[in-house]
Length: 263
Image (cartoon, rainbow, N blue to C red):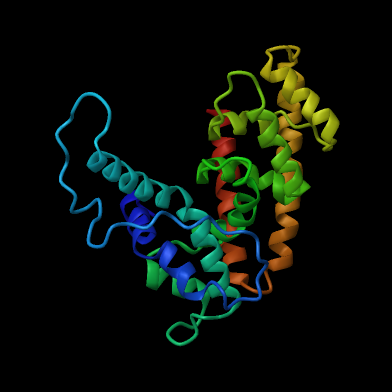
């Protein structure tokens, strides 16, 4: 999906969908984002003129403009997990059935969204909801890096990794930083060992065991692929076509790895 299309479907329906169907599902009821500040009637960032840059403290008008702008920016920040919750409600409640045969058809035709992305949003939102009180500025990229950990070891493990990284001195939590942290996980997850290892890494005290770390990365990735394979096989009865497509993509990735190694 192109960034423009992604932004468009977010703008058109992410929060609207939650509002319209939020209370009608039997899905888990994790806390949703706090309501955004009310906007002045008829005023929005698309019609607001760009103000002339001034000096000194903000005027009341400028404060109002800042509040409205930050409200719109905040909408984008939380849209991904609000949309994930909404998509889960639509999927599990089969609210698409009036006009579409399947949920995948619904997201592709109604929202011009790849079905794989829709399912990623559904998987991401419960973890994002749990992380939000600890990290109000959590974004989609950061949550995405933690999803494999949540899938294999549980959400508590993913939260431990995030909070450990965030607790480091002078550390800015980014998707890249979390990716590095996840790569350092040992084959078997033990919370005390993981926390100690990550804290040493953040302090720059992790021993130079690059060879062992590379082996750990391969082993960890293999373990995650095995876990993912089990999930795919278990869920294949619900969508065998998607499962076969996924298997074909894995074969393509394996061939690309072989080509790059032998190049």
